Image (tube, rainbow, N blue to C red; front, side, top):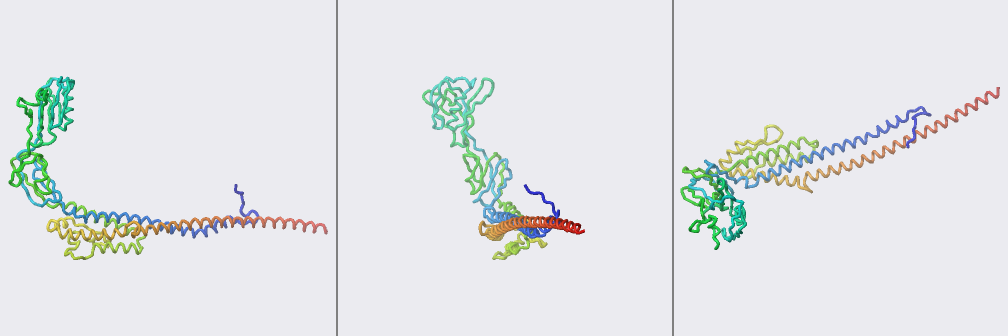
Length: 432
């Protein structure tokens, strides 16, 4: 427990206030260290933000430089309700006409009439569906039979037509004549009894299996399915409806991804630039160099006959150095001659990505090295602050101890003075 000390009781000097003022004056050094620490902390946060923005910019530049985004094609159908088309790599620009004569259909087989689907069929025997054996026992119901057939991969449903009228319908899992359901009865004649085979032993067809028939650019083709992937290279056709009129398909370059990628890179570039300019450490030489290199990569000249401003990517008219994207101009030059535009933009994007890789690379990149240096400076300043605080605390205790000793000395001298005064007074009175 600390001992209560009254400042200046003997000396009359308010030495506690003196000690507090001395410590306050000597704390100015700590305050300067704390201010430096705050500055370094702001710089570290600014560099972390800059690193994040530059990493995003690099990602956007890499995406814009990838060739797949430049080689996309868009397939447009004049009547998507009848024909849809999707273009993939390998497709070619052009126009095609397609007339759907008939759609592919799955084979459907229907059985006889049954009053109750939950009643035992009282039939026993074996048969095959598409080569897969099925064993029917006497206690099996129509619903059980549907489950057994479904196990062969063929669809099987019990359909209620009316009260007391139920049918088993088998459906091929795939369209086309080649995928028709093949039923083979056993010696017990179960399939014939169920009505799935007619008198000639053929499947009791409800809907015949059919191939899709269509005319493509005047040629008649047929396929087992309504999705056609092998008629034109890189083009997938989805047949949805038949009709007498031809559907017009136009395959043309899809520039939307390039436009979106350019807009994204421009936005990321401007965001990174604003982060650098607004940084608390914007006066640093390294940041100035960084800003100059970014501007240089955008403005650099190479063997290309074009420059970025000619394709719609230019520097703003102010001193910010930010980029402006003229979307309409970029789209126009892409439609006119995409190859030189691709060569120019991808080369700049690759150069920007390559430089930023050295800037944000973990370990020896500009940003990680600078950020680590600032962290180390902050740590060193915090150690200095702790040591300075410890020295001030010791200094304060020392001063207090010195003043307390002075108080004791003054108090002792005061007692001696009072005693001497009493003695002198006694001696003086005794002589009288």
